[in-house]
Image 1 (tube, rainbow, N blue to C red):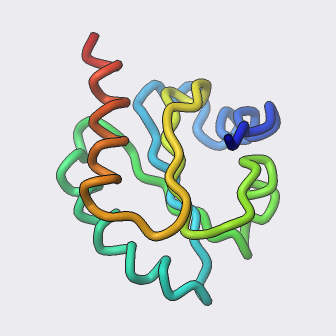
Image 2 (image 1 turned 120 degrees about the vertical axis):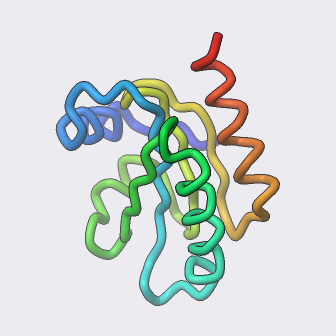
Image 3 (image 1 turned 60 degrees about the vertical axis):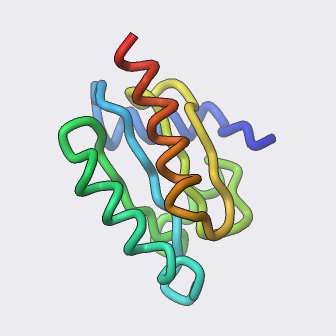
Length: 113
């Protein structure tokens, strides 16, 4: 299982400060056809959950250190974290809307409790 390095969470902390809302990080690359296919699904999730989470797009060619710190070797990849600190979920490879929604709902349900 993917275990992001401590430096991954330190990067998130530097980039987003004391962000407390859940973050959905969408890792992709311009050359990745599966990333392009998944983009509309991520945008749909972002629009539906705009008041409850922030979506951050990370191009692995522009921010390779973020991808390395996250431990990623494949894109597309989605990582959900709670407030820049807790690793909440991971999906690697092209995913269905249902799979993305399930991960998001699982993390957001923790926020509700």
